[in-house]
Length: 234
Image (cartoon, rainbow, N blue to C red; front, top):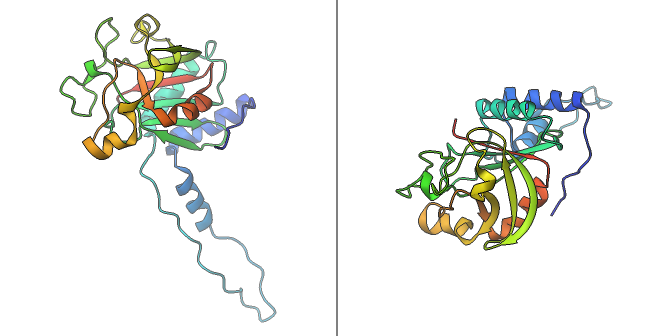
């Protein structure tokens, strides 16, 4: 598994990349590569005065996974708003709860390179009482078993009833009860891809960001401690 660098970028570089992402959406790596390959380039002429014949660039099939501009703008505004609390600002995670649980909607965004990786993530049973696969509502209340919205600070790791997990600190009035409610990042069997293949949707958590069991290690590595998760339905 390729690691994402932990180098601290300059503020100017971050703002430049973030502005481009917010204005033009996050384009998956395959699409970016295809666009770069399609750009016209200057080629030297042969002795006959004609440009050499070169094979057409291979266009890689694109992925539909993108972060919509309005959601990206909200996330970047939250990052700026909580700048004194979010110590690591080179990458963020966005949970797009307007998408169904059958789609990869947990987006890991590198603000330096513009690259993104998307994974499946479950929402809370209290947010989807009918188990439709779509989040219907948020709640910040104890006992609601619902997902909550807003900016979270990724905190320390611990081992609990779901195995290795990561605590989250809610930074907004809509999620400031997250630590008391034990809203965390953890792995779960009901968030594995085979749940989508079999049932057409993931299972539901008690409000936590539950990812597939085999995705947990990479999730922890990409998120790390001190970065922001932004959850919303826009």
